[in-house]
Length: 117
Image (tube, rainbow, N blue to C red):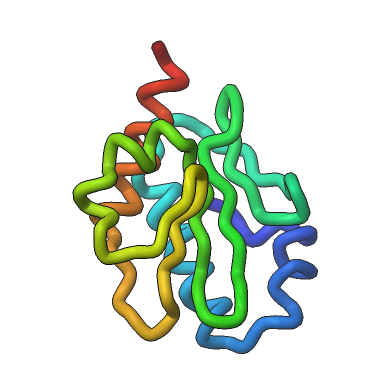
């Protein structure tokens, strides 16, 4: 894993340190879960992790960090996501709750395995 890309740094500037720290933690976990080289870029005005296609986006909001994996990942992990607000393509992770490293990494591994098929 390398330094934050400049567009990510710009994206994070308006957010307080606690939110940025959570973002950095999730970013680290994404790289740890990956067995391939991921590309980082901005897409839909959010930090995005890309392999052959999008692995996930991360968005910071006022009260939560959102992970945008894929609708299929949300469906596959729906039982483990019952404590989070979800939609077809989004998982909202409140800042006041502990982030679930295993869940996040399992979602990333799933999305990468789907891209390798």
